[in-house]
Every structure is written in structure tokens, then in C-alpha cells.
Length: 149
Image 1 (cartoon, helix red, strand yellow):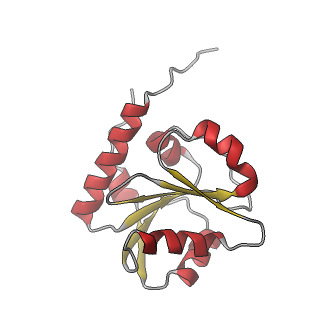
Image 2: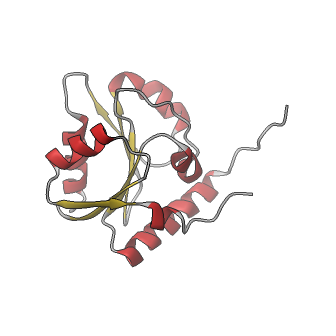
């Protein structure tokens, strides 16, 4: 069975910087991704989807932010090599946490790009907590990233 060679963290950091440059050119305040191929390509993090929100948020500047259930912290720390973890408890609203993270970065409105496979309940929860954003597709920005060999 063929084995893959792990992509160095420097390559993922470069991809985040290239995404941030594309975001500036396209006028995107931030990009939100759920687990899937785009998250793997950008960060190297492979995570399964469930009814509990796990998201990566990339603003135009700074390190990515990760929002995840608190009980997944240990596993997440093993996999996530760049960015900051923000945990939510079972009785908390993960979308309120995302909205607060955006505000803490000075983002209260603008164009918030969602990766195309983001599920409706994530979009709906986020737009309820952060209604001043215009929600758009992140495809144009993500498609500018080079493909790993």
C-alpha cells in the first residue's frame, strides 16, 4: 500500500499566507472551513464531520483559529500544528464563539467566505450570530492555492 509523506508545516504556513493574500485581493474578511479536502490541503488536519461543529477560520492576517468541542481538545492538539484552539462546551453555542472570535479580530461585517461544503446548519447558526456579514463562497480564493505534488 502506498504511503504518503507528511507535508512540512512550512508548506501549510505558506498556503495560509497565499490564501490570506487572495482574500485581500478578493475583499474577503475571513474564510471558514469544515473538515474535508480543503481543510486537509490548507492545514494537514484530517477530521471527521459530526453534528458537533469543528471549524477552521482564517482571517486576512494572523494565525488560523480553530473552533471545536472541548472534549476533542487532546486529539485536536495532536493534529493541529498551526493556529489557536477555541473550545466550546456542550451547553454553549459554537456559532456565538465564532462570531466572538471574528469580533475580537476587528471583524463585524464584510464578506465572510464559506468553503463550498459547509453544511447548512453551520451557515444558519453563524448568520444568526453574525448577521452583518455578507456570506459568499470561498471557492475563488481556495482555487488560487497551488496543489501539493
